[in-house]
Length: 253
Image (cartoon, rainbow, N blue to C red; front, side, top):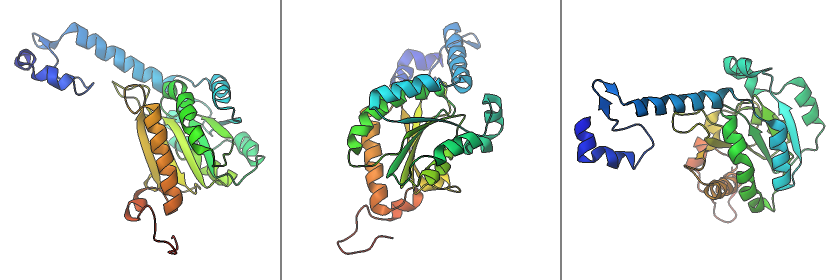
């Protein structure tokens, strides 16, 4: 390993990735600096998983940034421990949230859902800025109230979208932290969301963060995914076998 460091190969690799490559050694051990940096990254990843989302603060930030109505919802997982142990409960709303959602008007083109997922850091740091870039691109799209859901997983967007009768749903969710990315945000787009949808029926845009996909790039990709979903009338794996547009007069499937 020391030869790699000395001949510059490690430096070239390190310039291409945040992964831990070409680390130096002291005897048979890693250098103290690298050990401490690994422990810090691991601690940040653990904190991202266990930290509770500041729902009220996030709702206020979104309302201020976007002038949108925000609903605060909760999954059937009562707390973080149960959420981590019971993924199924994170995919469904609790009864109080169902009643609140059922009282809303339905039939919007799109519902935007913010779920804490496995990194509340990702949600708090990136969602307001992404929405600020995205919403001006949706001027002709009717929007349901923005939903913030605590202790939630991606599939909770299916129940929300179905209840609201939305044509499309986008779930912004904190992705599973890595040792170089404790705050990566993902966005899952689903055509005609309803209970029972699978991940194969969604489009995923991931790695939205300062060191990854920029807010402008993410908004552009989301806009394109929404347009294609409407043209093809579906999302996910199956959409790759259908052209983005059909000849005039040809009926869509």
